[in-house]
Amino acid sequence: MPPRDPSADDRLPPGQTRTEQFPVLQFGTIPQIDLATWRLRIWGEVRQPAALSWEEVCQLPVTERTLDLHCVTRWSKYDTHWRGFTLQTLLDSGWVTPLPTARFVIQHAPGYTTNLPLNQVVAENFLFATHYEGKPITPEHGFPLRGLPGAIPGRDDLKDVYLWKGAKWLNGLEFSAEDLPGYWERSGYNNEADVWKDQRFAD
Ligand SMILES: Nc1nc2c(c(=O)[nH]1)N[C@H]1C(S)=C(S)[C@@H](COP(=O)(O)O)O[C@H]1N2
Ligand SMILES: [Mo]
Image 1 (tube, rainbow, N blue to C red):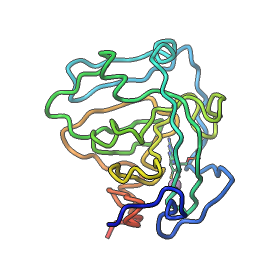
Image 2 (cartoon, rainbow, N blue to C red; image 1 turned 30 degrees about the vertical axis):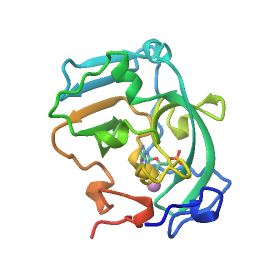
Image 3 (cartoon, rainbow, N blue to C red; image 1 turned 90 degrees about the vertical axis):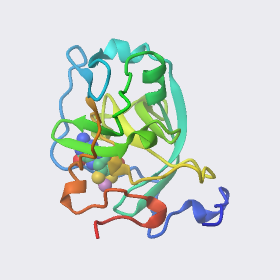
Image 4 (cartoon, rainbow, N blue to C red; image 1 turned 45 degrees about the horizontal axis):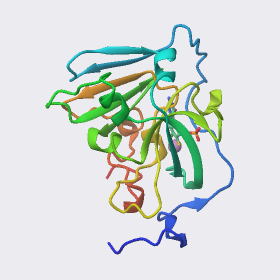
């Protein structure tokens, strides 16, 4: 593939339309979350399972990212600003030490999971987001924490996937030796979900 010009509208993947809105998409209802009892649980192919409280999450070093979002329902939103933390930060701070067998990360939320290769979750275009445009993420967009796969224009070295590959209301990270297809991946959507390859549906 030829390199993409970050300034041109080849920021727009095939089959997508740009929007200024921020549509809300999920199945089911918005969970009620009590930060006092909320935990981010980490388990599976890791040296030791962990559970971070909200306070502990807030003490992690902060990362900011500007990302283009691409939804499989064909809307794209450019230059969204997010704050949160990265998987690299969880690794560096000792909260997670994956075993050599860990190859996939399964994000868990109430009634929802989605799966990605570990190398894509640790990449620069994936954030665990707590804030959107300077404010805590609203309940409908995933309060208090969401997995967020976005695109960084010009970074052709990174793999960009559709937005469903990030769980809103994220409360668990399962490190797995095997790929474990999640809610949409088991419902006919493409497991790889590469936005540049137009990989929307399973073959
Ligand atoms: N927990 C949970 N996360 C989810 C979903 C869901 O149904 N439940 N839907 C996914 C889908 S299909 C999309 S497109 C995005 C939508 O995020 P938004 O509502 O903030 O636009 O969330 C993703 N994460
Ligand atoms: Mo979606």
